[in-house]
Length: 109
Length: 116
Image (cartoon, rainbow over all chains, first blue to last red; front, side, top):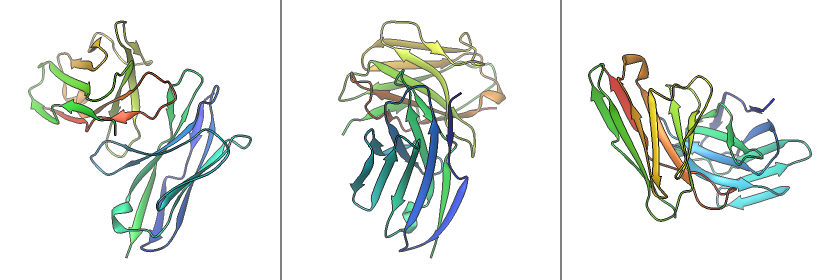
């Protein structure tokens, strides 16, 4: 079956670094996406990985290991505005996104 | 960047009313649009996949006669919630991606539907 696992909730301190992990099992693979969703708002696109390795984009980086079915989103220099849910999604062979349940990230001062 | 416009952003109406939600891709052609529903503190739930010029593909458990989807052009898809009831109250979000399948989906701002 198809399955995406990520932690339900994480807490981190302002200015610190946090890593949100995601493991996936999908029918075929056409890339791994990370989205940010603030409460009451639609998701916004953060990153896309289709090849193994680390993609860096400012304070946010995303890593993919296809052989392990594993990805993580790394957030550096955390700011209070980073408090949100982070959704991991794998694109299957039909180019359909399979969504994780999301990780609620709480940033404390 | 790519922009998806969703309208209206908020609807409050009486039980039994039908509500239409529009989703437009403003600067790209969206061959496929997706309709999601999200209940509070839960993840996105895909309702249906809409391809331009063809019938929508509904996920299991989603009533196609209740949630009517029309994708008449490459830039517009509509979702009509027919005879809405309080249990249909939810956050409805559309998304679209362009001609190349493995591009990120771009989301509309969502429609918060409240049925009294």
